[in-house]
Length: 291
Length: 336
Image 1 (cartoon, helix red, strand yellow):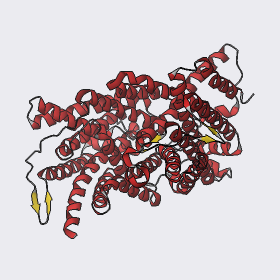
Image 2 (cartoon, helix red, strand yellow; image 1 turned 60 degrees about the vertical axis):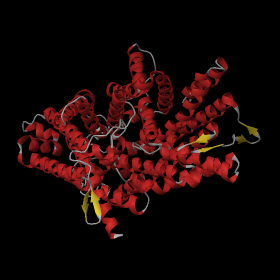
Image 3 (spheres, one colour; image 1 turned 30 degrees about the vertical axis):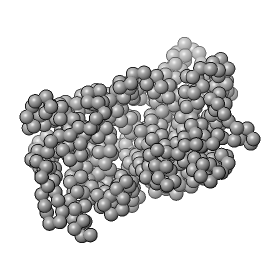
Image 4 (cartoon, chains in turn brown, green; image 1 turned 45 degrees about the vertical axis):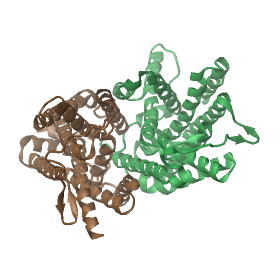
């Protein structure tokens, strides 16, 4: 049993890293615009599918990944410019429907481009599993873990050490105040969407060799990423990372020990429990409502 | 006079099948639109009037449908009794969930209701012994109403139309009752409502239960009408579509919700001819309506019409509760 537990943990952390990256994307956009971007999962799908397509067109993997990320960033920027900016300040329900509409639109586009089939990206460094005691680990999992660690550190560095990062943080605290000290809030908004789309695309590229990808691949991933961001406390990027890892591990343990069919139910039950006891997530700040 | 719109709408609903008794689009798609209208009108009480979002309403729809399906096929219960049992189950669960869930705000509430919907859907897929799993349950007997068995598309249109009119009538009256005013106050500002002596937790619980009952009721009718249920009819996409209907028609308007439901049902039916382009167009339309008509198709157009009429010196003044309810359309969680 303990050996199996170790295996579940490894799987959970790999999946959890993915949720963490998607959740990070949610947090970035929420911070900048108070919008929950339900198309975040579609960024992940686009990253994976575009890489597969470009690879198929003869580009080498690093170049294909780079180009796919760039294209997804462009999609994120277009989404911001044409769907979010015109609706800034709209009620929550409207922005939710706009981003869900965007998600359906992107899914529809992917369906037209690549059909309903599942596609797989070859693993970056072979498929020979690595033996770790009694558990096995795919080399691709190492790529996922390493990639996530790098990206999370990169985002932290960006927020703590760079001027644009600090400006973005200022916008998330108070947009009006940020504007008053000379920060261009519009540019920051675009930065957040581009960054978040790029993060999503990279997450998709890292995981595609393990999970396969299809036009619908982003739906559940998006929901899990949203869960990660909520569990961590909406708008707290590092909270989203912790939330994602927690969610991945719990889901993997639930699938292994209870039932794999119920794994999504277990994940969401955990989210509900967290919310019932901590209505603003584990690391969210309490908000006071002005009357 | 207050119900003038209602009588006009009812006349239209009755007149349509008389004019086109054999039209597939009117009878079959119309019945489906009617079911959606019941769901949307119920959800509108929660989303539109009380300002509480729910992305898991398909769960209650599914509970009503599966209660009817399981109780009639496996236990031989009469349809009406199974329908009542479905209402009881959905209502009870809604009542239990209401307090912890409706304590949440904004996106946290969206997440919680979404999670609830996914959990119920997973159970419908996985609890194969009871629900038949992904294949669903078939062979649901026709509905028997006090000795009259509902058969054929035209009779189903009649039953669903009557149910829809009942739902709209109930909603219109509820909105104008003390509960309705309490809900609008909650929507405007929950704290202010509390200061006025409204038990906001109780008001929100009541409306959550009522909207769950509407959904379960529609679910039971759906199960009998289709004679078949499967989990796909109650997944997240359906929950999202229900919210879309409410918002599309115009939030906090009973007729807006009903018209939104009918419009979206017709639209989806019309888009089927585009096959692979259906999703692309559907997504683009959702975005476009929300960006250009944020108040919704019918309320937005209606307001434009009314302003136009007033400018010409025609039409009556807007009554006060209408302006109150539209002024309240603003997210309670977002900073002012």
